Length: 331
Image (tube, rainbow, N blue to C red):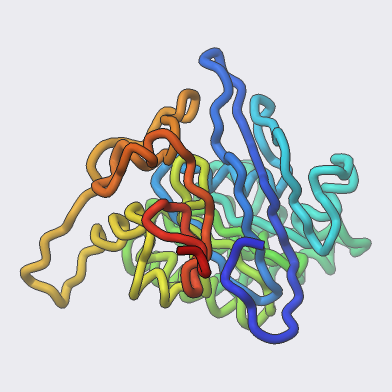
C-alpha cells in the first residue's frame, strides 16, 4: 500500500486501491479520481488537501456510496475491514453508511431538512440502524448535542434557529450518533469565521480521540489539515501526488505542487514574508494534459514530464509522484 509505514501491530480499516471515479458529461468523461491508492489505520487521522476540483470530495462520496447519477466507479477497490465496498449491493451499503463510516458534509444548512427539528434529525439515524424506541433515541440525541457543546433544550429547535457554527456542531452530533469506525469530514469549516473554525477543529480532534475513531479530513487549506492530521495526502487533478506524515510535509515537502501550497500559507511571525501563488489554473479533467498533470504549472518541468506520467515512488518516509525523485535503491 502506498503510504508511510505504520509502526507496531496496527489494524488497517480502509484500503483504497487504484480507484477511478469518472463523471459522464456532454464533453466526455471527467476523470475526477484517476487511480488513487491510500489507506487509513484504526485511530489514524488522514488529511486530503488540494485545490477545488482535485477530486477530494468525489473520493469521499465514493466511500459513502453517495456519488451522483452521472458519476461512476470505473475501476479499483474500496476495502473496508477487508470487504470490497464496490462489490456489495446498495441495501448492504446502507448498513455501513452512517453506522460504520459516517460523514460531516460541507454545508450543514443544505444537509438539514428545514421542516424537521434538530433532535429529529439525530433520532432518525439512530432508529434507522438500531432497534430502540423514539424516547430512548431522543434522550441519546440530547446527550450527543451536549457532547458537541449544544444545550439539550435546543434539540427542539429547527435548523434556521441555529448559527452556522451550531449547525456544524449539530452535523457532527449526527455523524457520531452510531459511534462510527471512520469519520469523514469534508470541508467542515467552510464559510465559518476563524474563531468558530478553531472551535470546530478542536471539537473534532477531541471527539476523535475520545471515541477512538479514524478520521479522513478534507480541505483545500493545507494549514488547517496540518492541525488535525497524522499524515497528509496531496491531491492534484485526480491524482495523489504526495503522501507523508504531517511533520515531513511541513518540514520537507517534495512535490512542486506541495511546495507551492506550503509557500502560500501566511505566517504572522514573518513580517517581511512574501506570499507566493501557484501560476496557472488546474487542468480540464475532461481533457487532462499528457504526462504529469502538473507540468503546465511546474517550474521544474522537462520534456519527459510532458510526455510520461511519473510513478509514485518512495523517498525517505514520503511517497511522491514526480520525476525529480527516484525510488529508493535506484541510481
